Image (tube, rainbow, N blue to C red):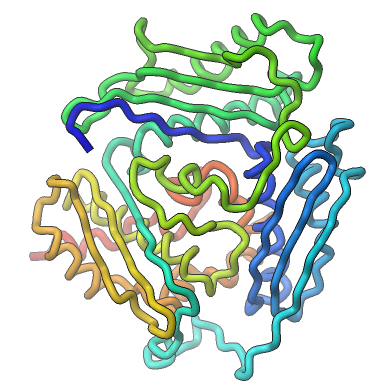
Length: 397
């Protein structure tokens, strides 16, 4: 990436069809783990006009009413329009129960180090974690702002400030960089659905969103729009209702929104809909945890951590660090400290982050809360991989 550039990232509201699918898939994971923390489950979802398709493979002692889980999520998001309604949409399921594992499950919290070492990953993947000092959350500014705008769109709808908005919306923010530091807002684009085609007028929608969403969000930001910032609100005109009645959705199709807005690499594997034994999900969280602690410790302004896992092994076969020339010590030295002080083993990650039990300990479930507005960089919920409790290992000589 050049020193001087413009970078854009987008986010979507929880009513976007892809995010609707992610939330249904993660709600299924939560329900399984709440009843049986040793459940193995992979859940996927697709939506279109008046129909929801759910596919799941699982091994568990839990009993799940899949259609009811989906209808609850759809209702909570706010889809009660004629074209797509929580009560009347058709729900089709394709379910497969997996054979039980031969050995009795053991809680990682009770495992010895030797037992942790003997738990291998069962799928191969390369995952990435990233952090930078552009925001308080140590996230790239474009995706941070795009998420904030998307959350505000949902907030003004639910608080009845702009009650005519529908659940579906999309945001995009372009940021201008000089010497790899953000200096101004280049552009802002918001597309928001409305429930009725005849009211309000497109002019009123644009004024309301400018004042109630954009200006409200940027009033709390250090870098704000200026007289050269290009602002587009529903640039193609009215967007009626939106959601599955307008465009289809699929679990795992918003990986960049789930992570770093494409400012950094991501694995391409879906994060939602997977239990904690899937290293392609929790490995991404562990990599973010490592990168965030490196930047929080002042070892680099930007840091990408890259972990590669192979089937049958408990540890990553490769741990790589890239600080893009901003590191205070050599990247190889940072990687060596990661290998020494961080536990990237599958069972070790589950143990450290308590990933089997968080759905039971979190009101309303845990994983579904990740399925909209990002799996990383969240400051609204206490995520264990967002802690910076390992900074000391980088500050020692």
